[in-house]
Image (cartoon, rainbow, N blue to C red):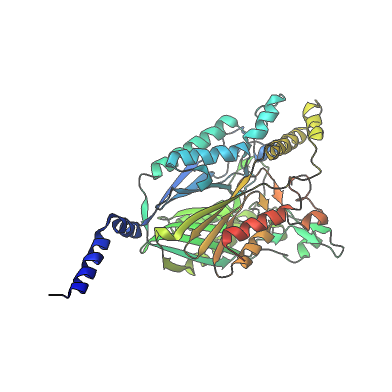
Length: 463
């Protein structure tokens, strides 16, 4: 028989192991990470406006558009990601889409992140701005509202159905691959510190083409989810405007859609989601003159980078306890030159062009939300040693590179193009350099850099 002291210790240890508290902890430790994926066709019908109404409406479908997403299930409320083949979702539309997905899977909207890939031959949707246009006699000018609301409903329904059949996740993978001759910085700065050349998605200016690529992130980054040896999901991130050519009436997912399809053919059992990084000042202009054949050429270059990232990924075990979702709500500083009276004058002028009307109502929509105290939610998804930052607007590449430098010990991805209400978001110095991105298409002030960099540091736990 054991001595009394040893018998007492054994009894106490047994009581601890079978206690309800310990049983719950033990159960929680064994609870697996699970994932569900969903997909929905969001191709607009013939006649619908494209790109906020700035280009020719739909005449034909070159290739379909989709909304794709995943639901991560841990011991907390579900985390939902969604990425859509549209040019933009802004203001009230962004709110509505997040709320619909949250209701569909039983979570809160702050745990839902919705982004676009930013193809231009695709819808740009802003319920808030559309209400202003309609109030001034211009309903349906920017997009087909019935179609947009139906797309949101069907996407949420697809997520609800997917939630019924989640898959277990035992491992994640992460890797990166270089993309050759695709991205180039749109803003070529001269010796005087001002814009010397501007390169859009396509460029025919030989002097601008001859300039170096400039500041870019040449890599596509990838995070994958696995059930032991079975791959389930691939998330890819690449920072660039995805257009090869656009505005000819043909709906298309463009270069990234073709690259994504290529990966689907190579890995048909895997759900493929592609996110645009901080590509606001990045495009293919150095390597694209707008010729139709360049769409396939550029897509193949991106697909090669995606393939390299997959082939060179590191795979590591993961548990539900290693998945965390954190957010910061920030108010982005309003550009001081914005004047409500100017925009109202445009809306009440019977001679205003369609483009001027759309631009005016979009700026008014953002200003009204800013004055009401609206804040943008920035999210950070932590999965083991990986982090994914979820950012608003057409963000400049410098934010993505800064995030990587803040935590070089982690594998960091960035998804931009969530709420498009603020438009382009430049760095502080960019506003003094001039150029298209920090002109009328931007609703933010130079102080936006300090706001976003601070939020990024907090979310990444950087010193």
